Amino acid sequence: MFNLRTLFTREAIVRQLKQLPVLKTPVMDVIFTDRQQKTSPIVGIEDILSVVRALPVVRRDSASIPATSQTRNYQFIEPLPVNAHVFATAADLNNLQVLDPAGKDMWAREKNDFLRRACRMTTEGIAAVSLSGTITWPCQLQTGGFENYTITYGTPLSVVPTTLWSAAGVKVADVFDLFQTMEEALQDEGYGSTVEIWAGKTAYNLLFKIAEAVTSTAKIRVEITDQGINIGGYLVKRRSERYRNPQTGVMTPTIADKEIKMIAMDAGHKLIYCALDDLDANLQPLPFFSKPIKSEDPSGWKIVGESKPLPVTNPKGICGATVSN
Image (cartoon, rainbow, N blue to C red; front, side, top):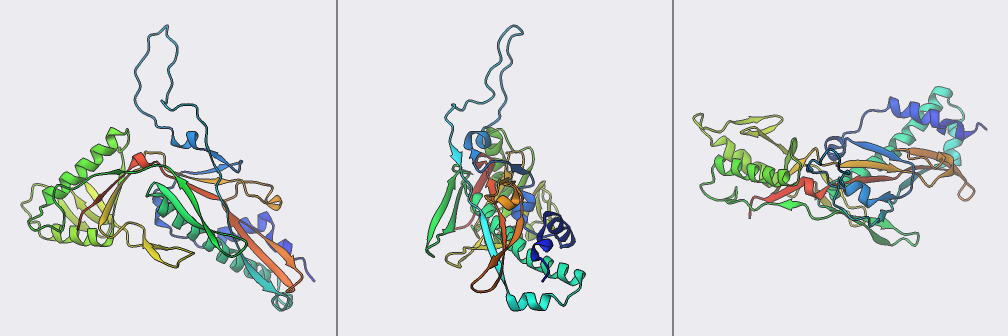
């Protein structure tokens, strides 16, 4: 019998992943484009939450000054892994023996595709949750129960609209004023040179109606496109995606229905991949790794896929507003 491990070498996994289609995950693709690999199983919270602001200059003969006002009180985050498997029975492997090398490679690629999708969608869900300033995600125990995996970054900024978008007589000027106020709140924290504005389902529908009612003589430019709704230079995008809670099965929208979020792209949001707790992966911080493990009862191979992602959100770079009652 051929050695199944030859289909899951590091080189084979890299080749197979390159042949697979790119997965679309909006939160990761837009907000967490800064991907880092850390050769450690822990992350120092001071290192990821340090805030950079404008500093005073010093005299030419003076000593340097601290770049951050944070105290030297180190705390550490211990990211937990995403670890899933699919099972290949002895019968499956018996059938696999009749395939040529290309067929065997395609079989392994399909297994890796399934596992990388599971890891990716889990990471996307955790990333979406992190926009609240706190990651709370189910952690499955060996006994079959669950406990909460929780990481707290802080409370995002918030603004209360002077006029709700659901109110009678709301004007596009009220919408523009809200965006300006949110942008100023971010700028007061040292961020906001570039922002993403995301709207939940209800908020976007209300904004659509406001934009539709605008006449061509409006002083504020209003444009409805397939990319979103442009209000005086602020492009609002509809976020209709939802993620599934693996414990309860409840589907939750990435952005709450009546809410908008303005996210500063210069606030240091990042996605860190930490070192895997796996000797076959050489304890390296790989975004995705898989390997087969032989099983005696039932007879077959368990193919395990794993990742250890940590979406890091700067809460001072996110501002939210509820625009409807």
